[in-house]
Image 1 (cartoon, rainbow over the protein chains, first blue to last red):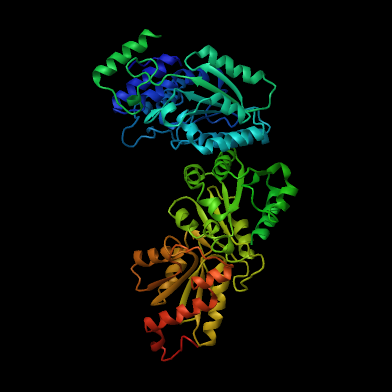
Image 2 (cartoon, helix red, strand yellow):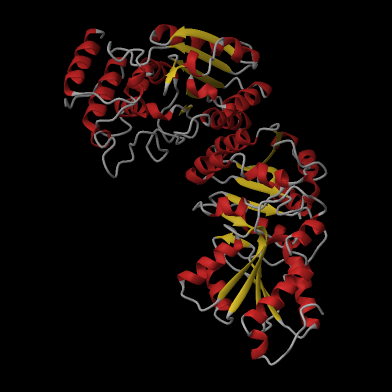
Length: 270
Length: 321
């Protein structure tokens, strides 16, 4: 691996996801690739985090914890975890498991069980308001996670208390563990559902950084007091053609040949 | 117990702005003193216990000490995984108040009984579990534990009147309270049902049987040395709890006995079977499960006979007396 500092970019997030999941022979690759552009947008342009232990930092909660590798990639690219630590991903005795742990610098909440992150986030947003802090709370949820009733409990609470410092992002890749969302438990019309719960909704292409950043900036300038949700239309496995929209890449690890093809494909898209 | 608890919480909250109170739409005639004194620090989150625990987790990360309130099974069982992954795993100072523990919601039936809360919480390392015997002890326990760094569960009774004079409102984390020092039988109990145990001891005294009562007001961390000191002096002991006999106090005492190789038989008195649908007042339900003072005394006499404790003392006592 090269030792020079890498830029925090979609390419490097994808590259680290592929390198580390190949080395560890671990799946959840499609879910991590799905959010690579969202993560690049948030950590390059949106989140106000001077350092991971600044009490007034923005909070980010990866509620879809199974995509933690994308978060580890960002933490490394930000310089908050070392290359040596990153290279322990899924080794025995590592803190960097499949799901994120709050003991890792830059991670505020451990997740892994779906449907909890938005409640944590609503609490964090309420705390910011009580402390009269301008910090914001971002929660990245999966679309399958919107099956969880607890998520909608949190959605109702946030709207009732007008927590406009809370921003949810739905990684709407239309896939979940065992099938497509339309076949498992139909979420459509997802934007209408969030809107009917009292949220300020924007829909974007979740692989277009300009669109993502623009939409989140528009939340900032909106005078509406509602919490905000960005429905990011994404592709599970984005960037690697044979993974895209394929159910098996929720869990599957790569062969050597698949890994080499994947590297070539993501480089083409830089 | 819960009213006095909330009054003490109001006093603490006057001095510490980190204290918040959340309820899942319960606590009529109980939580008003806090809500009226601190309207901006009181949140009725609606009938959404999972979200309540999640909110408390987010609030605690930012430095608050959120107390969350509901009836025992709704406070503990519904959001159990949130409690496990949130406050316990993160070691955040969330305070869970389970109200009406045991069989206090007698007429309301199994849905409202708090008879498995200790069992499910006790398996989790890293949560302090407080089981006060009366309201004075509840307030003392709150004063002693409200600012602990990790999460705390308070198992509270609706009984605002009963007092166990011998405890005199004493609470100490990791210690048990001993009432009397009778040589004939050891009864170990937790929570509000201690009042029945004290009455049972009075009944037994009239028959010439003298009890030691050990009140466990802190299930986690358990008062191991107090338990050992007392168990060592008896050949059998009875545990009394308004809880299933599996997972609660009886299980704790059995574990300590086995792990330390004590020569003491543990008789667990509590709820043994799934409730059968017939409900009634708390005293009626206590009667069903042999948990009234009379039932506890009967069990004590029967078990003493079984383990020859009575013949050792050379006495003959009629159980039906």
